[in-house]
Length: 483
Image (cartoon, rainbow, N blue to C red; front, side, top):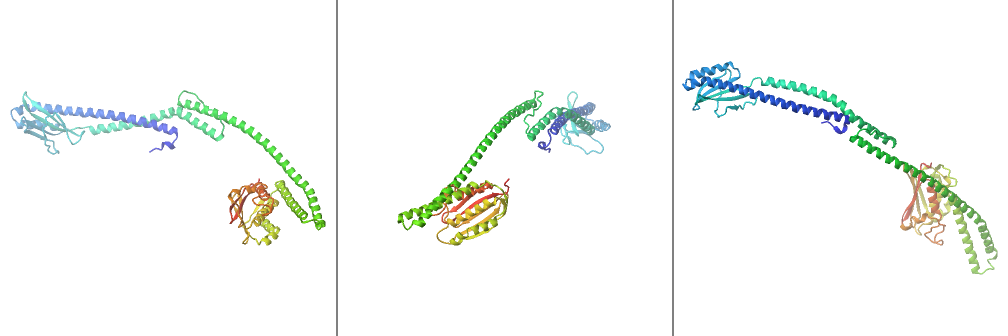
């Protein structure tokens, strides 16, 4: 079978036209052949019936006088006609009166049926049996002939040859005509397909199709052009909207950058300017405690001690704020060995590690592109937090690992500390958000906010998974491409 779906429309149209022409010619030829063969058969039967009639008229006297010898001699004259195979004469009582069998033929038993003609079961177009009732004027008997229809095979072969010739000529003519006629349809359809492909490849919606004519293809072209016009109009409006949106985004981005710069300058200046009076307060309070503590009562000494602790916390807070404001100000990325950063972090926190008997392990830390100073601060904050929020009993354990994820590195800082409640897992990354009192755990609430800002600068994300009482694991990613 032909796969019409995978063939071009040009080939499909030619195939349909040729098939139609073939079937039409075949049906016409079949009709004419059947009609001519039927006429040939009917004519042959009439001829055989005429012979039977002549024989009947000739043997009428023999039947009347019951002269079998004369009847037999009359039948013997049928050998001059090679188409007659068998013949028989029956008297008026239906008894066989005389018989003829052509040389080389088998005897044939006739059966009186009362019909003037009977088709033989030997083949519709091969042999027939005809009968003629002899009257003079009374019924004398019946003459029956069995004959073959000569010339049928020659006529059939002639029809086949002529039919094949007509079919071939018809198909050739139909192919030539259809090849020219189908171009009117296929050329326009192929042009339509080419234009639609051009629109799809170039996204050029200003292209238009020719709309000549009033047929379905012209209607389709008009509808397609209308669709392209609507798309072009929508695209133009969308481009205008995008231009306006880009302008607004650039304006808002510039405003945000300016506001952030002003805020960072304010935080830096404010933090820097606060250090001098804070240092003065701390110095004079220390002098009072050192030189006049003996002259002051217990309440006054308690006030001095609280003032010194508050000044110390304030100094730590200002330092953390300065570190937070400096992040991203000098965003220079170089090759950084995070294994070396981990070693430096352990060395800097050595006192706290030994005091808490913390066990720290690390594996698979990569060499990556990043800001070395800020990555050191990130590692220090996460490790110091894990040490700070340890459980009262047991040995604190911290494991640091990293995995290569194609486009980024995934780091994990896991500990067996006190853990974090589910509702606080996002709050902890907000500046000044503390989950514990300052007397219970020291800190300013800026450390994890600093970590988040550092990770964001490195095009990554940071999050935590934790089970209260079992520990926490802080995850963060560092992108490989920081352009």
